[in-house]
Image (tube, rainbow over all chains, first blue to last red):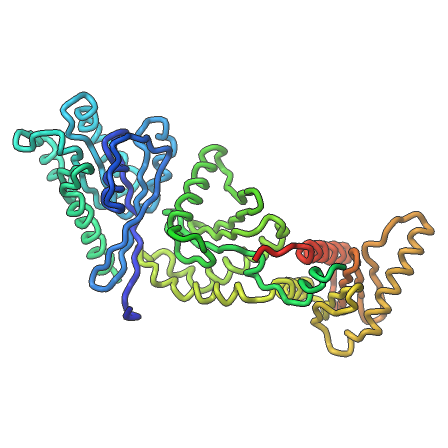
Length: 182
Length: 266
C-alpha cells in the first residue's frame, strides 16, 4: 500500500425501536447472513465493515444500540463521538411497525440532543413484508426533507434489498466529509 | 533452587513476557493503536468497544467513578484514563499492580507527549497514530525489571542501585559506578544483613527488612527479601525523606521478588 494512504475509523450509532431489524441489517451488510429467529440486543453490540475508497481504508464501526426502554439509561453515553447515525423503523403493517414509525421523531430528537449535527440516515426496514407500490410514506419523505437527513432507504435485511446501497451511502458521505477536512 | 527457576533468572525477561496486550482507544470505543492481540478474527475495535461500554456502564452504575481494573481468572486488565483517551494493559494476574501502573504510565506519557495536540483534530483519521505501534512493539521488547529499577533509581534521586541474588551469587542489575558493584562489596552487604538479623533477634525485633546506614558522604540502604538483596546509594547532599526512601526500596524489592517467581506461560 502506498504510504500516503489514510486509515479512517468512523463510529456509526444505529438506533430504532426494539425488533425493527437493526442487528439484522448490520449482520446482513457485514456478514451477508440473516437469521429468522429474533434475539434481542443486550445493551449494545459492536461490529465493523472495511471498505477501500481511493486506496484509503475506511472502517465503519457500528454501535448497534438496544432499542428497548430498559437500556435508555445507557443510550446517550453510547452515542458519544459518533460520526453518523442510522435510524431504523419497520414497514410492517401492524402495531409494531406503526409504533416504530411514530417513534422516528423521538429517535431523531434524541440523536440531535446528544450528538449535535451529525449526518443521519433512515432505513425503512422489512420492505419484503409489504407491497412497496402501495406504500404511503409521505410523512417520512417530508420529515427527511425538513430535517436535512441525508437519505431514506427501503431495506430488507432478509432479502438484502438496498442494504449495501444504504451503507455505502454513509461510507461515501463520511469519507468525503473527513477526507476534505485533512 | 530448581534448574528451571535458575534458568528463568538467567534470561532477561522483556515486557512482552508479562504483558499480553496494550490498547489505546477513545471514548467512541475506537482503537487508536494496539499491540499483542493474538486471537484470530478478533478485531481490536471489538475489544475496545466492549471496554468502553463497560466503562460507561460503570459510570452509570456508580456516578463519579471510573473502572480502573478488571480481574479475570488468570488475567487482569488495568486502565488509565486521560480526558477522552483510555490506555489499557492486559496481563497475567501474577504481575504486581504497581508494576502494571508503571507500564501504563510509561505508555500513556509517551503517547500524550507525541499526540496530545493532535487528539482534538483526528476526525476519524487514525493514520496519525500509526507510528505509535512501532514504539509499542519496541517497548514490549525492553527488559522489565531493569527498566523498573532504572526508573526507581531516577525517581528517588539515587546514585546507584544494585540487585543481587544471594543463591546464584549473581548481580541481576547494577546501575552504579563500576567500583561500587564488586563481589566483595555485595558480600559485605549480605554479611551485614545476617549480622543485623542476629542483632534484631537479640532484641526480639524479628526479621530484618532493611538497614539504613548514615555515613559521612552517603546514605546506604540495604533491603533483603528471601535470597534477593537490593542496595541503594544516596548522596548525603540530597535532602531526602528517609522513611519514604526505605519504604519505596522495600516496595520495589517486593514487586521484583514477585516477578522473579512468576512461572512464564509464554
